[in-house]
Image 1 (cartoon, helix red, strand yellow):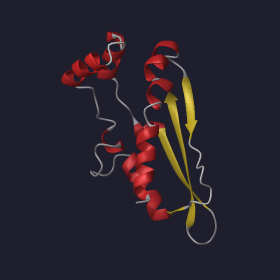
Image 2 (cartoon, one colour; image 1 turned 30 degrees about the vertical axis):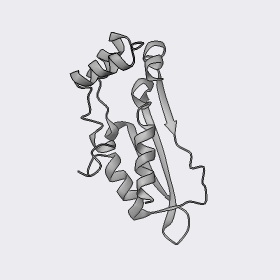
Image 3 (tube, one colour; image 1 turned 60 degrees about the vertical axis):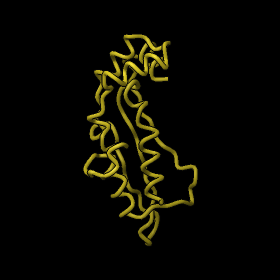
Image 4 (cartoon, helix red, strand yellow; image 1 turned 90 degrees about the vertical axis):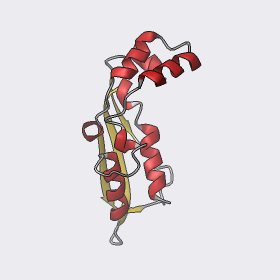
Length: 134
């Protein structure tokens, strides 16, 4: 999908908002703080998720394997992957919205920026939220 976005909508600016489809599932403030800490890379834990996204880059050996496994990816796309960097502290906005006096609430999440970058946040953020419930 990102490859298609890169080629057809290179400069498209988007806002992605997550919808909690389980409206009766609420979070407490410490849970929200835990999630936000990981999204904003302030924690050394879970480096393989959001904490490493701003420093993540395609390594030469990974590029070689990706080209072999996915020969339909152009060199232009693989060059883009090698050079791109994400900025979660600038692109991802989380907010805790209290829903009563018991300290529970909802988490809103919006991701803003160029589509070719923001498209990569969905899976890691959902994984972080899922881990917070474990």
